[in-house]
Every structure is written in C-alpha cells, then in structure tokens.
Length: 82
Image (cartoon, rainbow, N blue to C red):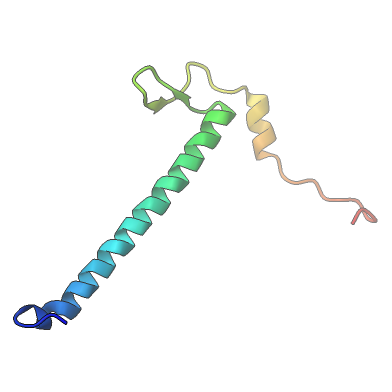
C-alpha cells in the first residue's frame, strides 16, 4: 500500500481514473456506432469515399424510388397470416 502524501489523494485519483475510463469507453462506442451508420449510408448510396479519403455526398443521389421504399409504412398482415 502506498504511504505518505499520496494516500489521502487515492480516492480522488481512483474517481478520476474511473471517469477517464468511462469517457474512453463512451468515445469508443460512439465511434463504432458512427462507423456502422457510415457503412450503411455508403451501401445505400447516400455517401461515397472521396479522393481525399473522406466521406462525402455522391455526385448523384439514389433515385426517389429508393427513398420511397425506405420510407414506406409497414403493411398490415391479413387475418390468418400469423
């Protein structure tokens, strides 16, 4: 166990380290979620890789038929179908 001046600061240091760990975990989770969303946007044609290595809007956007398909309301099942 640590002795001297550092001992009284130990609880404060533990809280600071725990806070830093939480911040790091949160940043990692947000980065993974953004990466997943960017991948979905690239797959749908909403974004593309630019020559600079960044993501950006494509020269042409997906057709409105694609947009209509993505925004349709779910169809109610007929009676007897589950």
